[in-house]
Image (cartoon, rainbow, N blue to C red; front, side, top):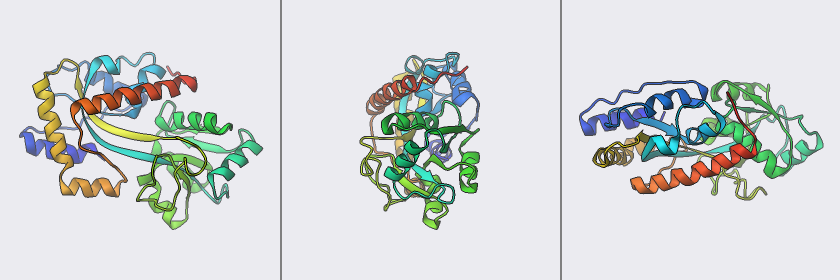
Length: 279
């Protein structure tokens, strides 16, 4: 969703075709390991996201160390999650009421995730710890089937990207209890932040960005960074990002690298606290 528009603009800017090679599996670690072993010449780059930075913490056989094996180039987008319920399955109006229902019947509320080891999986563990509740985690093989079951009432709740649920919330099929971000989202302006709803500093945001294998020459990294920044400044890209509830501010390679380091440490602490480790 975010890589393809960027790829089209980078291709035009650099005069080199950027081909997207999807390597799915094991929470993205298979494709990431391939990119980590690629020549450090700028011709193989990685579209990484939040989950890849903490992946080695929960996948002992991931085959890469994100800090060691990659050089950050530029962010693509940052998109927050919302805690959403199916009101036909669980009719509560606020985050406080959701927490009260969960405390009344520990382990009874089924909440979906996009899969074991994903951001949504860790979000559930973080929420349980912060709210002092126990939920019934139901992992899926991706966000799409999870959302389908949420709409069908097979599960009661889920953390979903605001862009994926905004239309369902507006139609009344789903109800958003809180946005897991520091400020309200334009796509869901009437939905309070988790902080406003009583859960202080509860943030669940996925970011997407471009990385190169470590030891890629600085001049190559700078050229790729410039091409991505130009793509992000394009009006068509800006409009598409707005429709997806995505944000990204102009920043240097050093700024992005600092952000990735800080966010990596945060999510690794969450993963360890949730005691998540997968084969």
